[in-house]
Length: 245
Image 1 (cartoon, rainbow, N blue to C red):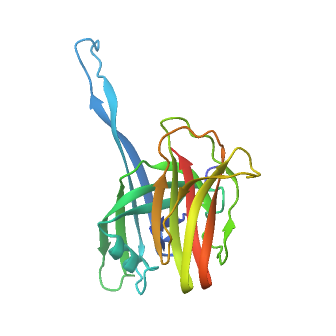
Image 2: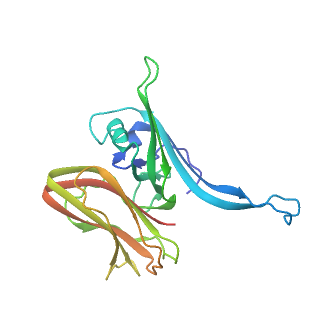
Image 3: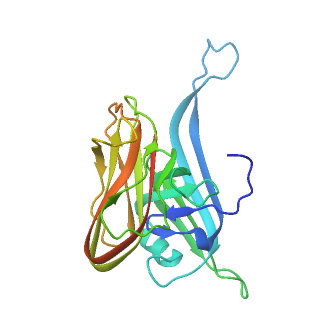
């Protein structure tokens, strides 16, 4: 990806697509530097990497009315932990770069001076590692039947690392609609005999979930999202992201 002007940053906070209501999104991560200086440090400070953390903050135009709107969604999520996913200035197509984490929604602010467009501000702080991965399902493709997503070469998982997955259900319609998404892996892109690595809880409404593998090695390098849909005339819009950290 070359140098770019920020015009199309996609942000998904639990079950809300903030793209059309945000004009500033910031993502930061840091590792604590812990002082380990001693008499053998030859006059130079020594530091060790401590705890890591990440924060996502945003602001934009306020709207309310249902859980797909920024006010309803932010108010419902405040004080809770859920997935946040941010694109790297793209439309969140399959394979596009994604940054995502499981985060505590810890701040929500609304209001400004008379005559101004009603604003909002919110932030969330990580409770899992910040993952640099790929979008595995796009937000604008409605799914009405059981299916599988596009194969992605995310890579093998070495011992001590994990495959992380985020799911954002942006809309659900129909009579008793249910979406059960899962993450599958395979040794090649044919997925002749896929292995299910993670299975999300059945989703029947707007919301979000995050999962991760156990930390053992997985030699499969190819990954995809698959889903089972039931109900009468069901339809779902959802976003998924995968990455190894």
